[in-house]
Image (cartoon, rainbow, N blue to C red; front, side, top):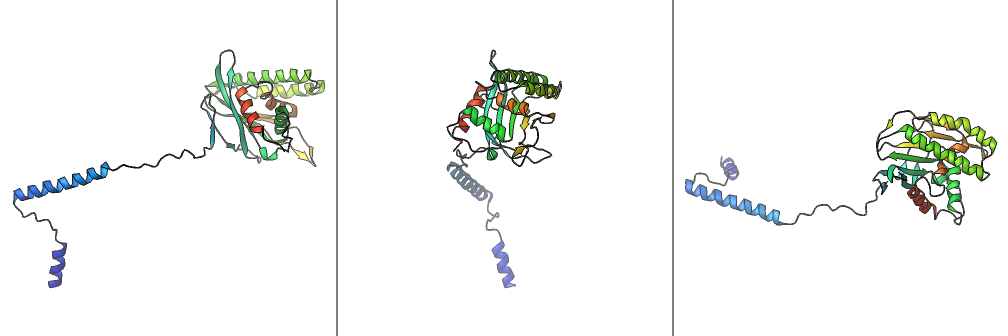
Length: 266
């Protein structure tokens, strides 16, 4: 009994509420004041939040003209294995006479498969080396809702201008021109008369060159993701190179790609 009594006495609350009402009120006010004082003391201390890490590495690149973001690496879903693509450059396509942003474009390539080239090579030589020897992707992201047919018309004008230019340079024979006619019509028919929503990516893919014993074994394709593929090496490669001819379809894209390729070479 003595031990039990001692334990019960220890567990008994120390506050004695059997005091007079006046003393109880004074005790309560004192307790409240002490609690508030402690709280204010805690709140008066500076609170250190986790500061943002300015040196954190971002995994996207933003087109400064539109704010549209492009991942630094790209994996395109496919039935057959494709490499992981590296972003080489980004830029905006404008309607020149109005200055309206039409779409942002990112150029990706499988840089691991690009054969060595002299560092003193011209940009034209370097970009052709990339396009002819590696798999590439053009990711086009419209700045506002547009139609596939609007984009198609722009693509067709660019390809036709490219044909005229290469023919004048003696780099497009009449035989090649005749072989391009049918694939070009098929390419035009790929695009539906529907809307491509704002900021929806349209990926145009140049797959790897198929080689057997070091020799090209089949035509390269020009693949418009989810729409279809055209098999014609000239059309596929020159479509990509059109973006880097002269000032380029997107001068900012050409500039960023040129800067990236400047130090590539041996």
